[in-house]
Length: 441
Image 1: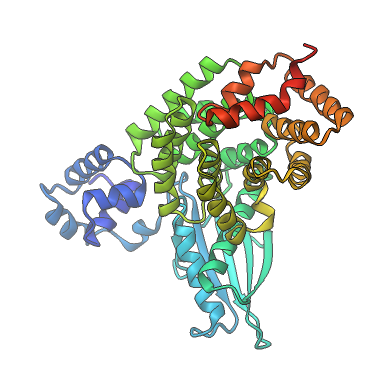
Image 2: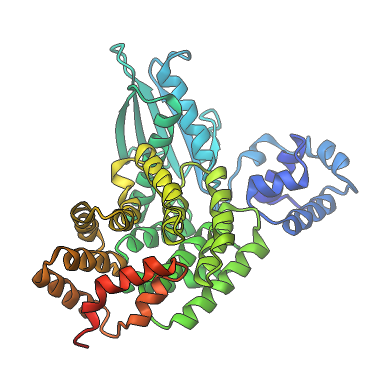
């Protein structure tokens, strides 16, 4: 008899747990049509005619077969070390982190007892034996002894939910950035799509046209592959979204490609949080901010640890005059997101400070952001606006010169495009603050 593929075994396992087709869609981030196709193939291989018969026939599948993983799976094993009191705060935090990590819908998290699986990452957790409430976390590649990242988390006055959210964001970000530095080999336990996507993720933090070209080159062929991957598609779509904001390349072609990526995402995985993010990107570029807000809210509800949708949503609120909602969202981000991951949140806050008239504070924060993203058009424009308001003409000219070095063909129309959807009064105010850039062009 023909054997089931790893994905078919995964779906069969979910069938045995009583999940409906719709629940399987959401669990595996695949479309309803894809589930139906897999089920039809499962019925054919098991020589049955319905799901009830498939569940019964599936009991004969060998345990070892169920534990095998596809080379394209991203598998994480959590392993507890030493004395770990089950009723301690450290243990509760550990369980909360595992639950929160599931919400990224990227990893297949397995129990440490499944010894027949070679995981992509092994995460070791332990508690302090001194009586102090501390959780120690180390991330290793596969079953090797090579530590990618390690930290200790002191359980303080924060609620466990808040601390778990901060810790999970830090853990996820650290795994991503550590993965971006790895070299992929044929024997690597880490799938290539993850290596390529995280490499591009790290590059995009620089917000430069060079990073955009790298993403197109590295992820373009990958998303055309027959094996659809929503996360890789999401990173590529992020690159095209930033390209529309930062005026990299041909704006019309970039918007068209982003639309193509959105259609591909919704066709293959309409319930995926990454497909919903791509749809948010696309709706922003075509000026449909109401639809974008709806998609971003869905993503935040599905994964409260996601930083990007929170940042973009706060920016949309700012652009559409909903300053109170923007302030609440930014403050919530600052409360729950680790300092090392607040870079993009700070970008949104700079514009808020500008609109609130807190010019010195805005300029100082924008300069901090500029250290990490020197080619970010929006941040450079905000600093120029601040300098002009403060009467710092020479500094304004210096930033304008640097901006035009990065974007020599920049026009007032490009800045207006960046402000698309902003209330007329705020748009005119901002354009007036930066009009000196174009005075001598």
